[in-house]
Length: 297
Image (cartoon, rainbow, N blue to C red):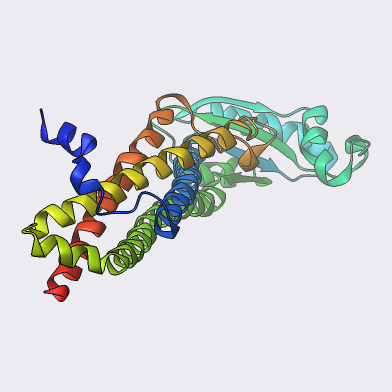
């Protein structure tokens, strides 16, 4: 039998050293379940914000806008001149002027659907889609300034950088939260293991008198607390995944508030949490048992 199988099956005589029920058992199971649930949520946040940062960076990096401000009599001529400049600009895959209806739709969230666009001096917008190689924004600005005085190029860099930076920091925050969850879980299990060792001090003393080795005693505590953490974390992960399923699906109109769950193969990531929780419990309990048994000597 492998060492992992022997560890999972355990030793019936050694298991009697650790009480199967009681406050420490409930505390370990509860804390592991809570940490597993929170870890799933933090993992979902980290992965979703990573996808969001990548999407914002990709979409906004390939688009730009030319805004033309001119008297109504010159608007059509300057728009046509700007389109001619864009057609001969390297790195521009497509350029088109937005219609009045499209510009009204862009302004509708702020001014309502009945905004009389045709009666207001609203600048004309030209949408630019770049090629994979991209364009030279500074060179284009110089050409527009010379040939279309009323045109202003906006390559979205001032909007893209803060959004991507915010999303990346949220992703980093999610990973930091996962690290803190593991640390807190280790501290909680250490306290529970110390309490259980202290409560069984007389039993440990008797075991030593009859020849039990400290490795035998410590192994009993390590196995029991590791399996408790594994079971609690698995329960918390299952509940966390169920909660993630109820989150809104990714929608274009929802923006950042949708698509915060797992997508595709990312659903495999929560399966890593219970073994990691068991590893944390194993290390924490082993260190606590060795230290406490040494102090009892």
